[in-house]
Image 1 (cartoon, rainbow over the protein chains, first blue to last red):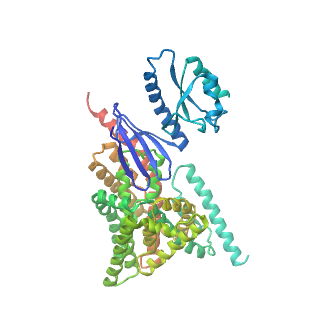
Image 2: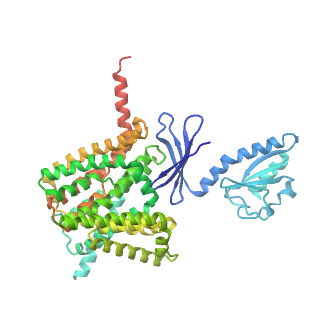
Image 3: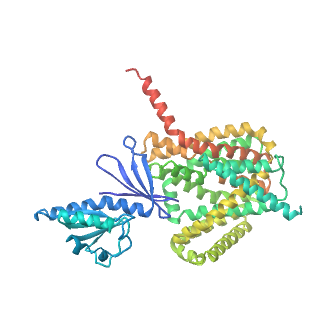
Length: 160
Length: 393
């Protein structure tokens, strides 16, 4: 994929690319650290239909939303020959009791038999996280297990 | 009331009124510059209330305001951006100068203000307000648009052109002989080149000198350096503003970002006082006789700016709507037109009516610019629909 990088003197950098439907999608990275999501209009490729300012947390959540399904899809395909095993993405909400606590404290493996195989944060994948990994709101956990175990895991992350 | 008390009281009243005006401007999503100018006109000579005691402070603070305006302008650009901007937009930049300075020059000559007046008015009508334009582009969500880099690189060219123009104007205002005039111009050009090279290669050393983790120390060093450089440039007849601009370019990287953050509120304060001081020194009763000229200039230079942007955008293969947007975005004039007029008025040597014409012109263009940028799309659409209707089916 060809990403166009254009300098915006005095403001920052624009990075965008054309998607199959013909629109351009990208970001404007402001010099002061702010990020705008931009989507071009269909009938006028020169203009943007949306310029959405995102703070770093919001940008990270968006990156996770875009990145996590791919990873889950990939894992699901890998597990497809193992009947009864599924992969699901579970997010840590701002109100989760495990926000700011270590992964080991959830006792996920012992309580549900499900494994947390990856944590996605700010668009970055951290594979095989250790028990001392601190969870934060906006993190997306990629969990592998039986459907029953995954339901239990989702409840634990919300209610403790 | 003793004189200090009176001055404090007047200054307080002015600042408070400016704050209220700024809030009003923000509510309508417009630039506060025209309101500051109006405020100055109302409180100054021949205005509703005359505030003598505050003008003394206003004068010095206004000078600092200009230095800070240009320093922050320099901080916004890296030297690399300036060089590439110059390379990419020089042709559009030249057209910009010719198309937009000419109306000002012609009007000044017709009014019999001589060569100095002509060069001053040319500068006033030439330069777009990068502050207003950048804000409007962001407010309207056009940072991602394809024509936006075209608009920004024209602004970069204009700002660099200021660094060449201001020394020329300073030298003409000082009435220097041709030889010494050439010398100060040469000094300015050498200074610009040296600063660009230093900033490109050794920017981090300049940054290291002013940088500090302590906010207070950083602010003092920064402000001190800016005023020192501005004073030195002024002594060389290169114009204080250019000195500050060059210092801003030389400071780079994270230091520049921190500096901009720290200085922004200071600039807003002192620049507001600068606009008021300009208004204070302008007699509002002098405006009606030149109002017709101001309206004429506003109409003509709005069209020439739109033409400039249209042409520059079309060269980048941008479609009709984008071209129109690029042109309309450039219409706003503001802080730098007043800086130029203020310089001419404070040094003297130009017709006193020039201040009246310049403030009336900027009053209109600072309001008209954001409106033009907003209405251009619906206007073009209306024209296109009209044309489509006219075609028989």
